[in-house]
Image (tube, rainbow, N blue to C red):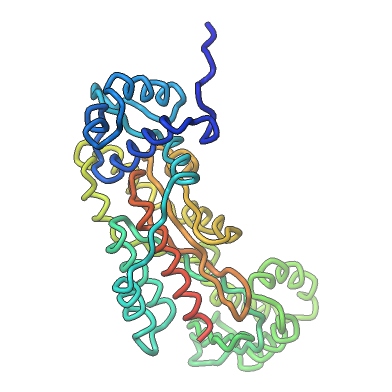
Length: 356
């Protein structure tokens, strides 16, 4: 059986009547969370009969832009419809002066705040302002290495010190294997300083194993093991290269559809525990200019829960590179016009903090 092609193909295929009806349905749905019927549109001021409105709504449904949830006579936008609305019809608002002052006061206004603490605060702040779950990936740390040293604290413990070109210092406590002497610590320090200087730690981790294998003949075995342990300590281990902060999960239960669809909420909560996939999703924002939006099945991670992600990269202006991303996760009917500028402004504030 063959089906006729949909009457519309994107915004260019919508006439003025269909575009107006579609826009009003989506805006009303985003505001109320309820399917929108023809009588509601008629009372809102569309100068068409309910029958004419219903005909257009049916065409929009056949085009895949609207759906009829359950047995309701009203219509709600599909994820494809939301994408079309966001890309072509959404009128994005501005961050209010009050919101700017609140964001600035809680981030920039607290002098001496560590950037990691600022990320946590920004995520909490966004979750509250946007009514979703705030999420942020910690910065990619790939500054060049300036100096490394192993400092003996006892016969069983040493301090692994790494100084980066950007001035940051990493100190890690690490256990010492039996037989490690001061000369072993110095040998390992000299080996790393001769090979790491000017290279990023991420680059060094990829290449050092090959170099270690080639140098084992000239390097004491205990010192070689110390080199490997030191690299692992500074990087936090393979599972801890990047961290993910998620705040405001409880906001997801405030959605009017949450209690009616607890399985969807459970799936979303499970999705939020997928650290590596979430970091991968946020890293995909790195190449974007400004805010990026994912709706429903546009991401494999949130396809089952039908959630939306609004995220923006934060970057160092001084280094001219993206270091991470911050965003909001919530139901597909997020208030896009409000959340998009909030995410964008917060990301810009984080970027300014990096350059202080």
